Length: 502
Image (cartoon, one colour):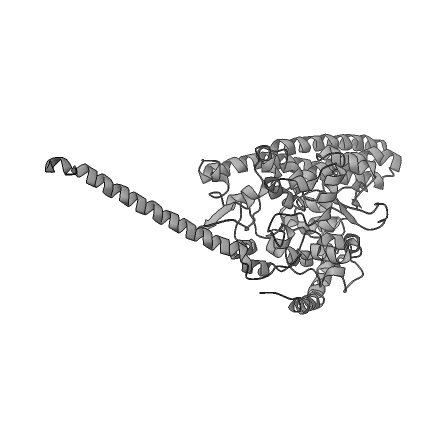
């Protein structure tokens, strides 16, 4: 009887092991509950009350320190890939042909690769493209140019009105717009939900018969980027707003390059008249959203944020990395979440695609430099406007296609097939213009072929198009030394009076 009542040894070990497992699981559950409590307190018990359209990123950072700390890393400038990176690069020095392509336009004076969002205000003030207000009479850029640079923009739009914000020169808001791109540009102050803070994107959707408020959270992870990383222009012909450079997206006919060209041609719009060829030119901005949306990643539901702002985890808290940067500087958290290849293999794949696109883009660029020079020679030899009309239209279309491919940052990777198609059609337009110019120059008795300009350096190219660079730089430095400090002082005084509730 006693023998039957005794437990077998394996039963004792089984009970012991089960007890260990139960204790371990309960411990993990307790730890998880504690972590969730910490996260709940972090989200729902803010240290600072954020008011609507609060522009100061550091205040948002008091409630969301992990996100803010990662955002501050957009100030870094230590990454360089094969094509660009986050350091400032003088693109006109790298590629002097750009000076000729933009002759007569501000970009021929100064065009640096954009640094991180942290520098949006500094880079705007420093560029030669905006002139030297307060020092000279020359101030070419309107207030609309501030639109994508700062969370102070939606604050002002809601304070003074959208049309009033766009009215006047850019220096009008010099002392008001001081906080670089940040939290209020993309987030609701109460719910932290993603939101659209700029009217142009909402208006573009409305004209297409779409309701942007119906967008899913995943779609919003790209749409907040599409507020700025798109093609746009300043429309001065809107009814009731005539003369006001109202920021508008040219999507009414569609979102590919042909649709945009048709849109601009129909309204007879041009950004500037080329100084050499006299062609009515279009300047593409940065159509990243339009080129991404038909690419491989977009078709698979991958958003801008998935690659450029991947999720991170610290101290048990999952959050979005706000160090908006090239995925090539964060391959483990971006690319390798889906792709299992090594870092070197992934980089090689990216560069191979980009090499092919940029090789063809450079060829189109050279064709365009020649076309502008040849058109200039035609004018010098007595060509008439009627003889030049079709030629200039082809130059206009070819350069917009080139610029669409060049300005859509990352599109050589995001959508290489579409960009190669755009470049190839640009080559067709440029070649047609050059063939017609060859015939015209011969008929005019002009020397042909027209010599390619000596533009091996940025300085040579700027001299070729007649830019007084020493004077422009001197005026800009005076502006930075005299006017900007007063703006900053006024802004600090205003913000020191803004109420903050703890």
